[in-house]
Image (cartoon, rainbow, N blue to C red; front, side, top):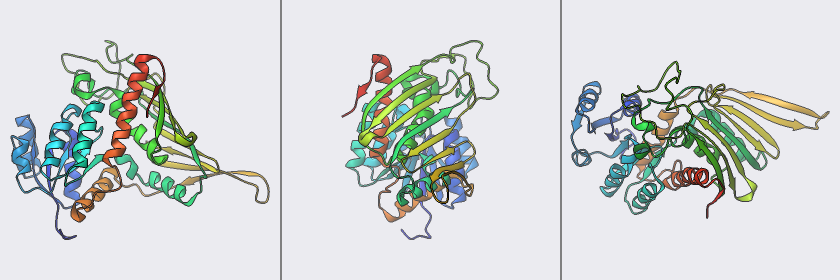
Length: 355
């Protein structure tokens, strides 16, 4: 495939995140072949908005001369659609998390290992410019040895629709941890260069989702009549990795405190603070040059769309027919194992060993 030739893309799952991806594909001038969804209204809206075809089954879509598919369904259905696409020889961009359970994630990973195509997982925050700056400084040795990362993704109020699939454990696989905590875990492991995880200790809570007096100002989706809430809404965890690397994790859909999307990177020679809410980055260093002193440096970067940057990497890999080194299936499987370990640790009320 030539560099000027548009990639032909199919969509599985035509909800909000599907439209979000499709908008960026249009900007990148690739071709949306069509989309599939179990909801006929969603199919009609997607086809009209993007002037494309809709399909009633994924088999029809996969046979429609597509180069790749983007899967944005609820978590429980990732395995069915991703494995079928991989078995059909297609490349897949699969939205996070890898799956709703560790067992399902392992089956997707096994299919990817044996497939002609590849599966890239949608951890778009790795493509934020400040994160790339941190990784660049790490490669230069500016941090020395990165030892500890504090990863926060806390909303004061931000449950994404009580009674929706997001709050149904059977479909989502969990709540705040698997929805937004998955981003925090992935980014922390990415900044640690994905070391082997040795031990996980965690506590999950469900304190707000079932309350009739849950007060909020805005919500991603809508409350449904059922109001079912069978998942966690906040999590605290501590993750031990090889070579003394550690991660402190705080995640919440709802908490009685200020919102917090900051990551603190602590190295032996320097540190950094990255705030995902506004992409601000500050470096913390010390020196004895002239006189002992502290140096706090504010780093400014261009504001670029991380999802679009992620798609560029994916489509370049599709064109080259070479699996990308970023956002690999094995890295996503490591993240899934940590999520599973946090839930098991909380249930057992003790640390869980990973080997």
